[in-house]
Amino acid sequence: MGNADLRDLAAIRDVTFADIDGSVVAVDAHNWLYRYLTTTVKWTADEVYTTDDGMEVANLIGIVQGLPKFFEHDLIPVLVFDGDVTDLKADEVADRRAKREAAEERRAAAAERGDAVEAARLEARTQRLTETIHETTRDLLRLLDVPTVEAPAEGEAQCAHMAATGAVDHAGSEDYDTLLFGAPTTLRQLTSKGNPELMDLVATLDELGLDRQGLIDAAMLCGTDFNEGIHGIGPKTAVTAVREHGDLWGVLADRDADIPNAEAIRDLFMDPPAIDVDIDTSVNPDVEAARAYVVDEWGVAADEVERGFERIAESQVQTGLDRWT
Image 1 (spheres, rainbow, N blue to C red):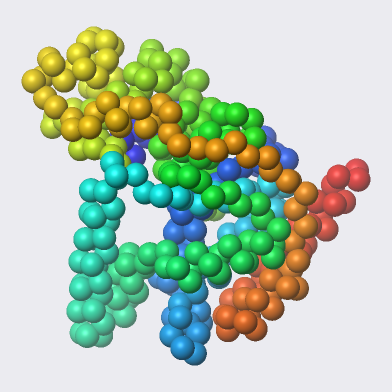
Image 2: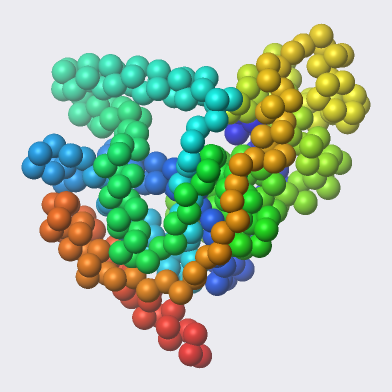
């Protein structure tokens, strides 16, 4: 739902880390990694994470800086990677590619005129998860003993399925589509400072007076990653219209409007491709091997990752002590 629109409807409350202590969280890896990747690129000189042959691995810094937040609060992250992109998302993917290309043109112009700040900002917006980033991310997570799952399609849908089936305690994403895909609870702000937020599906439906299908219908009227919305319909109007007319079809008929592939999109949200998984939560990071991989093998500046590795090591000691008390 133009994800920001769903923010106006979702039941979200602040929680403390003490509230979710010991939880297993299925994290949308693309969403999580991209946020740390772009932050690293924006604020770190590129020579710090670029190999001698020009390969950029800013993701390694992002991972080492991002994982301690989980470990220090006794959370087990399960990183869920996207699988095949559904045909219904082709327009969204093309739009993102076009925006990256436009940002790259503006970045080059900013660099040419000597505007380093603007160039860095735009460089962050041009980032994509390359084959090397995918490979090195999985290698580092394996060394740190972080469980991973390869989704058959949308990572967010797989996270939602894992939360709904009890394989994990919560989904974890900064976006809102986990709600539409049926995650009972989603933790947000896992890449931000401070405490997380918890988005609750049942509370959302109760507050709106809709079932999950009705919520999806309202989302589609506003627009999702898979479809354009109907002109003039915002989130609150969409909810009112679905209540009044019964479902998406009733609203479209009333407005003489159409959403291409509407039935397929509805079905995708209600029953997305996903797999059942068993998660081994006995995480035991090999910090020394991970440090050697990042610094020695990939040439990342040691001082950029040392504190992150220290925090990971310290968190494991503290977690062990906590479990004995």
